Amino acid sequence: DTGVSQDPRHKITKRGQNVTFRCDPISEHNRLYWYRQTLGQGPEFLTYFQNEAQLEKSRLLSDRFSAERPKGSFSTLEIQRTEQGDSAMYLCASSRSGTEIYGYTFGSGTRLTVV
Amino acid sequence: DAKTTQPPSMDCAEGRAANLPCNHSTISGNEYVYWYRQIHSQGPQYIIHGLKNNETNEMASLIITEDRKSSTLILPHATLRDTAVYYCIVRAPHTGNQFYFGTGTSLTVIP
Image (tube, rainbow over all chains, first blue to last red; front, side, top):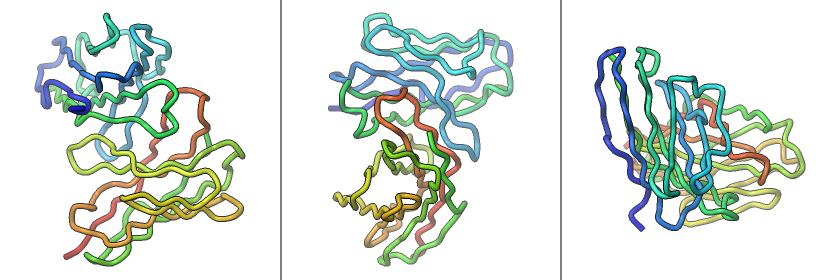
């Protein structure tokens, strides 16, 4: 069990560019979550996958955001036409069905800076 | 999910017990109390959860009042590595997949 891995750890991009982040969950975890965290705030839910199906999306996930989990293993989060307001820490978490009562395991996040 | 109220910041001397309070006066009967912490530049880390009874694990103890309207997370012997933001969350199981973190309590352990 190597934990939840996120790549890259840091990303600096110019406004208007597209960026993609990757999350590798714990191998036996079939549920995967994306959260966003801005400075001084707690993490906010973006979206959730069970296996390869995206089952829930927050209103925070605008049309410029898309998330995929094609084979039910790793997931990607893409932001198109980035804006300065997208600057945040993007966190991924995973869990196994039936064990959510014990909480999720989070990765260390990808910090995005849009300049 | 019920709203929680936590003090924005607290200090604790190294080696002493850190007692972090949380108010959740509108908690429902089926909602659990969860505590996570987030060390700077890392993702949140699950600490403990409980429903009615007090709970203890290798990281901390959770004391829930009899009326369940408040709780206290206790770190029995705080170390410098316990400096973090601590989030108290109330949530019913199987009611969705979101944890509402709020802004938490920033705990600073002082040498």
